[in-house]
Image: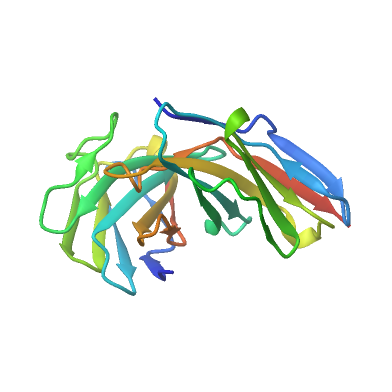
Length: 116
Length: 113
């Protein structure tokens, strides 16, 4: 069975600090996708990134960066120079490639509070 | 990407009644999904809805409680039947847009009193 663990329940930082959100996953399958979503207080789920299991390259998008390490089954998310607008709940998720695509297994989420 | 809309955005319903939630996508998609997010919790898949076939329900969810329709490739409905306060949640529609990308609608916030 698949599992996603986000050990950090809540994180509080001051604006401009860097913050890393941890995600550890479990699966016996060799082909899968990993996701990060942002859920601001308004409730919608905003897609941030998708990474497939064959691509271990790290990715950077503006202030966001992701570190995917298959050796440790981790897919961590770093926000550089955090801003108040980054305050949200962040979810890491996993889905298998193939017939189970779309059935995302979510972690419990990490609530990030960025204070001015 | 895919743009997804849901109706209603929120509702307050009486115990024992039913609510139908609509999901509209701006492009044709084969697979649509319905998720539930209970207060302060993560998301859980309710069912997968493919056009032209019956929905496939996850463990713990049954068709009598959550009937789903999928009349075409851009639309689906989820009904929450015989509601109780435990059904108070955000219900989200999701689509798999190919290339591993998956998008979610804005959600329907349901409160059952």
